[in-house]
Amino acid sequence: MTTRTSLPDSLAPPRPESAQSHRNDQSSPSSSPTHPASLSSSLDRPPAGPSPFPPNTTPADPVCKTVVRPGKGPVVPLHATCLVRYAGRVLSTGEIFVDSTDPTSRDQTDGDLAQIVAGRDAVRKNRGLYQLVGTMRKGEVCEAFVHSSAGYGDEGSFSFPSVPPKADLSYVVELVDFEPPQNGTRDGFMTYEERLEAAKRRRVQGNEAFSRAATRQDEDGMDKNGTNDQNDQNDQSDCGGPLPSALAAYKSALAFLDDDFMMQLYDFHYEKAMEEKKTVMLNMAACYLKLDRHREAADMASMVLAVDAKNAKALYRRGVARRRLGQTAGALEDLERAMKLQEGAPDAGVLREIALVKGERRREDKAAGELYKNMMAKVVAIDDDREDDGDREDDGDRDGHDRRRDGGREPTASAKTSETATRGPTGVSAAVVAFILQLWTVLLGLFRGPSRR
Image (tube, rainbow, N blue to C red; front, top):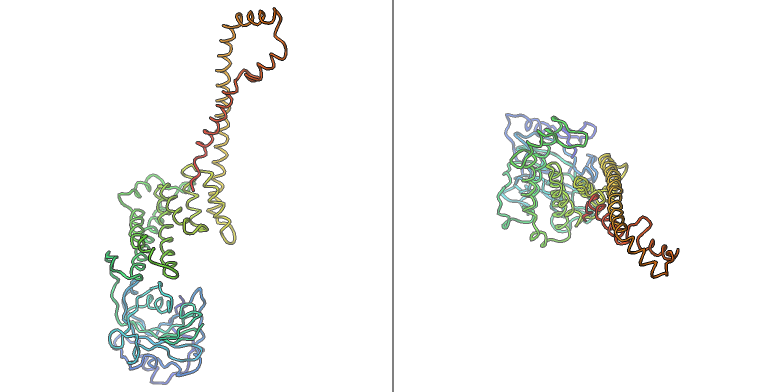
């Protein structure tokens, strides 16, 4: 959101002297606010025609706010219930489409006050107004431009209020009072918006705790592999510390987005809830990695990939967890997929992890080769010893028997070839060779670890 304390003189429309003095009086701390019959006329907006204030808004930054009278105290908490006076105008025509001070308006709660939830984004229409109120302080008056993407969209509104399609809007808002959000856990009695907002508040709390842990880690330092030192590991145990606090907040957020709740949603409402749930699960995976709970980190990332197979963050975090679990084949597959899904230049973290995985796989292959070589040498030596013992015991009897069978003649070349084919060129039987190959396959799998999906 873009915020300005005042408009440039070149953009401000001419105002009557009475309006200028009224604004100066309102900005004085000692003056008491007055509430005219129509808020839309209290700031002397042009009565008709296009607005002279050119909107500086885009879909990426859809709200441009100008403070007319500063408020007092802190900014309203996220999802606080706010009592406001406001009026809205279509920029292209200058038509007022809503005015809470109008006695005929249906958007009223208490007299000329309307009720708006600060920062609510689980709505199809007019998200910009909720975002605007979420930046205000008690007693503040502001003007704002809202891009059509955060207003009533490409479709507009043809009931109440009546807004044409793709209309950029302007608002004048006064925040009279607010009530902090309720943090109760009676989720069975909560509306869709209330449950989603309760989950988001807990996710924000978890993010704040995670940021504190990251700050502490930066101060204490990390080793070259990006792992905490021993003192930091002790601080981040399950008994306390910012990381366990963040994890607890994320788990609390997921409790509001359980399967029973998700099964009742579809289309827009399901997408908004799933977006929030995926964000929470990705944050939990990051927490588990910091706590060296790699199997749980991999499981949490897999849950995200079950509903969003092309989520690069989930692939990256599962790849990191698999590498630390020794599952290098699966880790390399995840990390390479994550790199392909990234836009622009590859992320340095992904490239670093891929290099680590490839290095570990080279070491595994070398160690497995050495093990196989040593094992083969031992097996061949044992088999040769057994063959030599048997040959010394049976040479006399076998030679005598062969000679008697052959009439005293030496064994033919074909007989010797048949015996060599059965026992192998080094004296190792075919059964022993087959056993060695099977054992090699098993050992190689143990070194590289299982590749879990």
